[in-house]
Every structure is written in structure tokens, then in C-alpha cells.
Amino acid sequence: MKLFRKIAIITASLLLAMPISGCSESENESSSISGADSQSSSDASKEQNTAIVPDAETVKLLGRTYLDDNNTLWLSYSGSGAEFTVTGKRAEITIAGDSSVSGGSNYARIAIYVDGERVVDDMVDNAEEKYLLFEGEEEKTATVSIVKLSECAMSSCGIAKIDVDGTVSPTPEKDLYIEFIGDSITCGYGVDDEDKSHSFSTTTEDVTKAYAYKTAQKLSADYSMVSISGYGVVSGYTTSGEKVSAQTIPQYYDKLGFSYNNFNGTKPEDIEWSFADNRKPDIIVLNLGTNDSSYCGGSIEKSEEFAQGYIDFIKQIRENNPDASIVCAFGVMGNSLYQYIEYACVLYTEETGDDNVYYVQLAPQDGSLGYAADWHPTEATHEVAAQTVVDFINENVLG
Image 1 (cartoon, rainbow, N blue to C red):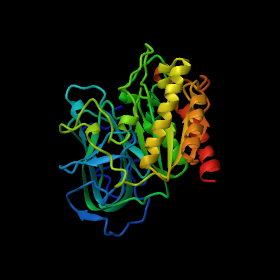
Image 2 (cartoon, rainbow, N blue to C red):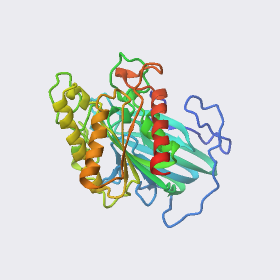
Image 3 (cartoon, rainbow, N blue to C red):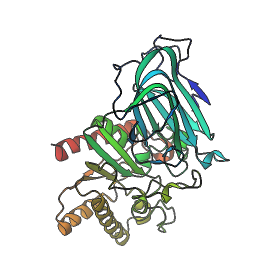
């Protein structure tokens, strides 16, 4: 998985003005990095020969992020990151690791894209990792995206520096903004390991191959993820039937994330997420219940407890997002609680009069498209789920 270690050189001064590779597999394949016309500096652009602070003035923030006092932009939840346009002769990114790099194993997995091509796919196992994206005598213009592929629970990482000889500016916001709330399915658990007998590893998580990210791409939407593997609405995953109340998403919905590790002594759950100060989603896709089902186990009493918890969570979501359409999706890894989700949505609307809440059933995986680690969905299964959600949103929400 460590395709670029320590210093990843996508192009070097020897290449000068030659086309540069956009593929991580081979540095000999050619594709031009200069896919866009040079942009003139705007008020939001910064031109300098040293490090640029990765804040909202210089980059488009992807998902929930946190800029600390050292000007490092921390990424915890899956899919969080930054995107910007760079024009210059040189561009280098420095990624910071959290406390997991000191004797840990499930390091953060990071991807860097140049003009849509993934040129870095790496595990952040050092305090700092540097990636030289290009360097030459001729100026280039490119779109750079930095995306955290793995989830928050095991590790976070930070964008410590953006070093350019030229200008950077945020890419434009897209018209649609979607927030996805979920569990391991949203995180892309095990999607790079199609052996159902294998277990969890951040090395095989890739949120870009999961249904939520795919849904955003298909709808040409900006996105945010709030997802943790094994977590539910009223209970996390359990093998004993006993409630695991510590592993629930609602308690972290207003946080930067949750992690067993920290960055500079701070944990993501210590940082409040300000709904008032950040862009509000137009649509929220809620996909939780798979782990609750291990607790409910077919019990009507427990299932009704889940339904009430689901109603309470919709209320929490609505309080912070008064205008968003809420789409409740469920079923990929089993649909035993779907009727209770539908029931919860109906009761919520009857109680509140809020009819901007929808529910859609996703087709349960049946093995025909394989299984990933721990019986999780393969990318092909995620693709099917994504298309179902896209079609539903187009027909019922946007239509």
C-alpha cells in the first residue's frame, strides 16, 4: 500500500516541461498535469515561495476539518481533506501523523490526486511525510485533492504544509452539498480486501470506493462524512446481545470525530463542530442500523427502542440542519430493521409535521458481487447501492 514513501516524486526537474505521470503504478506513463488554463490570483489566492496555510482562504475544505494553532489542518472522519488549484513550477505537500505513529499499526491512509488521478496512496506512519507533486522550469496549472481514505477511530492525519512556487486558490464550491452519516459501510471498511475471512485494517479502507462517496460523485456534489465502523444509533456491534451504548453515532455528531489516538494531545471528540459557522448540507443521507441489529436480535422490545432512538437522532439532525432533506437509507448488510426505520420516519413526521424526511431500502448483498473483509460490501456492491440512492434523490428530492 505504500506506493510513495517519505518523499514521493511525481515529476522531477529532469522532466522539465514534459508531460507527467498521473498514475501511481508507473512513472513512465504520460498524462499532462496542465489540464486547466492558468488562473489569475484572486483575493483568496496566495502567492509566495514558502508554506501556504491550508485554510478556507486558500483551499476548499472537504468534510469536517480543524486548523490548529500550528496551522496544521487535521483530518479525522473518512473523506475529509482539501482541494485547490495550483499554478507554479513546484508543489509539495507535507502530511502530519497523529499519535498512532508512535507504536501503532492502523495508521491513517491518505490519497493525493492531481487533476483527478491518484498519484499518492500512502499510510501515514511518520510524524511527517513529504510528497513532491511536481518540479520543473515551466509553470503548470493543476487541481490537487487531498483525501483521507481511512476512518477516524484509529487515526487522524493533518495537512501540515502546502509548499508552492506560485499561486493556490480554492476550487469552486459545487451547487449541491450532501452529508453522509453512517458506519463501516460509509467508511469503505475492507473494500480493498475481497476476502470475507479477513478482518479490519485501515490499509484496506477506501472511502472513495464506498457508496457515499460514489453517490456524491454521481450527483456532482460536495460532501461530508460522519461515520465510524461498528457504531449504531442505540448500540454498537455486539456478539453477546448486550447493548454497547458507548459506540453510538449521535454522541459524536457534533464533534470533529472520535479516535483512540490524538494529535498534539487533542482528540477529535474534544473539538466541537460548529454547524452555524460551516456550510450546511442540502441533503443528509442517514445509513445506520446495521450494528444495532446485532443488539436487537429480532426482539420487538429492542427494535422499538431502536426506532425511538432513531426518531431522537432525526430530531438532533434537524435541530442542526433546519432546511436539509433527510434521506434514511438502509439494507446493504441486512434489512431486518428496515421496517422500524420506516416506522420511525412515519412517526417522526406525524409528531413534528416535518415532511422533508424520506426513506429508501437498499438491496441486501447476496454474494453475487462477492464479499469484502468481514463480509462487508465490495466496490461493486457499493456501486449498486450508490445508484439506488442517486436515483431516489433525483426522483424524490431534487426532482
